[in-house]
Length: 322
Image (cartoon, rainbow, N blue to C red; front, top):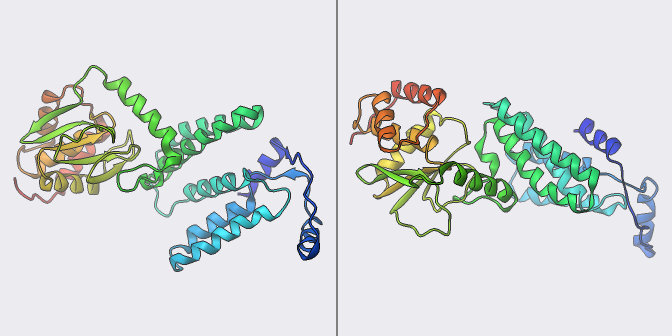
């Protein structure tokens, strides 16, 4: 944390462009003590805030939830010094989150994808600090892109912050990019395809679209949907055994017609539907399930990793009957 912060101070030195306001009385004496070590250089990201985030990640599992208010006050106290401005707080929190993600307790990293997103985030951030002015807006894109990198590095889809089938506002730039990508890849193809008996496979619908299905099982980690059941899986990664079991059970118990969706409706959701076909005895093998789905929805793409995960899951599944 210190190495990264100091590197930012050296490479991108920022200065406070206005004089500290005069304060007198008791408060003036207190601020005079702070000015003994205040400098005219703005310090972004704030080490104070970064350390607070890292400590909170450790203590929030060991202390009552209300103690988070104390950590918030610690972070806000950085504003009591002249050399800390607003930008230091979100950037300090940003660095703290990335440090926590870099050292997960249990990791299933996807280093190539993590490196690609991290490189994009670093490029956007460096451009913002170099050009400044309007370029500061790029930080609103760099932050969610870096969180995606952290999610791929840790293998933890929950880092994207999706709750109740909705993405948090700070991840909207990534969601917009995912929507555009899905449109470009699937334009001119059916949005949804019925596989069997009221089970439909397709791309995730927008929140504003009319709800034409009785229920939705959502496999995306990066899109907001109207789904009743969400099993978040990172894009370009296969579902785990636990994901496939949960998806198969959710599809079987969901009111019909049910839409099983991911961003494109060609990989994550297809693997989930294949697991449902196998678990309910509608097909006898992974190959049969994949063949049936491809016949009915030709744009389906289950890569080698997805097929291998499905076959491994088949070996240890518990059938629950059609």
